[in-house]
Amino acid sequence: MKPIGPLMWEHRLIEQMVALLRGEIDRITSKNTVNVILVEQAVDFFRTYADRTHHGKEEEILFRDLAQKTMSPEHRNIMDELVREHTHGRELVRKLVEAKDLYVNGYAETLPHIARELKALVDFYPGHIEKEDKRFFFPCLGYFTRAEQDRMLEEFHSFDRNMIHEKYRTVVENFLGKKVLRPAQSA
Ligand SMILES: [Fe+2]
Ligand SMILES: [Fe+2]
Image 1 (cartoon, rainbow, N blue to C red):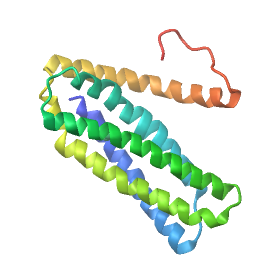
Image 2: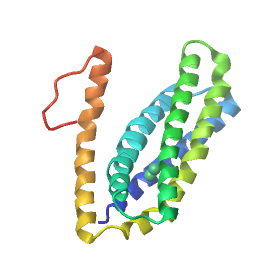
Image 3: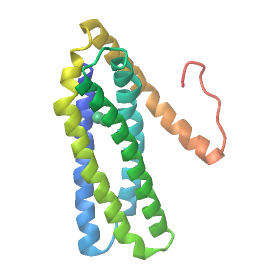
Image 4: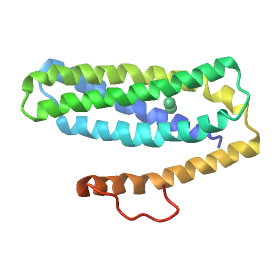
C-alpha cells in the first residue's frame, strides 16, 4: 500500500461523519432540538481522529518529509494552504464546543449557534479533503522513492499505534489536572 492509502481511507470516514452532521443540522432546524451526545462525540471525532490522528500524520510525517524535498511552487503553496486549513478546522471545532457548552448550561436560545457552527464545519471539510485527494496526494508521491514511501507507511502505522494510548492518557490527565507517568519511548 502507498502511504496516501490510509490517509484517503480516513477521508472516507470523515465524510461519513460530515454526512451524519448534515442530518443533525436538518434536525436542529426542523425540530428545534439537538442530539447533544452526537455533537459531543463529533467534537471528539474531529479532535482525536480528524485532527490529532489524521492531520497529525499529514503534518508531522508527510508534510515534514515533503519540506525536505525540492517541491514545485504550486505544491508548496498547496501544502501551506493545507496547514492553514487545519488550523481553521481546529478553530471551527472550538467554536462548536463554545456553542454546545452554552446550550448545555441552560442557554437554549443558543441552539441556532450550534447549527451555524456545525454548518461551518461540514462546509469546510469536503473542500479540504478534495484538495488533498485530487490535487496534492498523488503528485506528492512522486517526490519519494519506493523505499521512502515504505518507511513513511511504517511511520504512519507507528503514529497510529500511539494514538489510543495518547487519547486515554489525556482523558485521565485532564481529570487529574496533571501529567501521568508514561513509557520512555512514547511522546
Ligand atoms: Fe489535511
Ligand atoms: Fe486529510
